[in-house]
Length: 113
Image 1 (tube, one colour):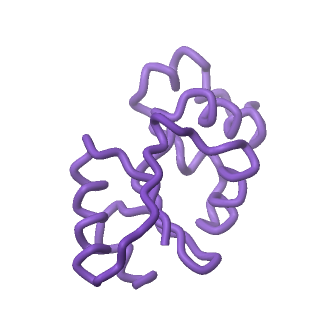
Image 2 (cartoon, helix red, strand yellow; image 1 turned 180 degrees about the vertical axis):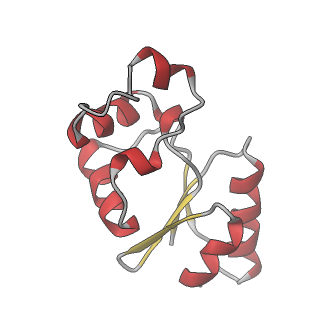
């Protein structure tokens, strides 16, 4: 099990606590320091079953400065923006066995435990 984690985020900490309470020690990816590659993020999006736009944090300054609200932005452009500016990636994301869930709410991770 892998968690894309931001220790400053309460939802991310709560999701990690649920995983650890289940007796699992996940691989913790501090994605702000080590952003995913474009192919890795595309694979996670496929596992989540959502388009890249569905994983964007719309309240971040980069969202506005990169004009990501533009409906003409392609999937590849949005993925590239998230990889270059990882604060744009909604968190936490938990991946296990070819499936992934967004830990919002943290209880979503139960589907993978």
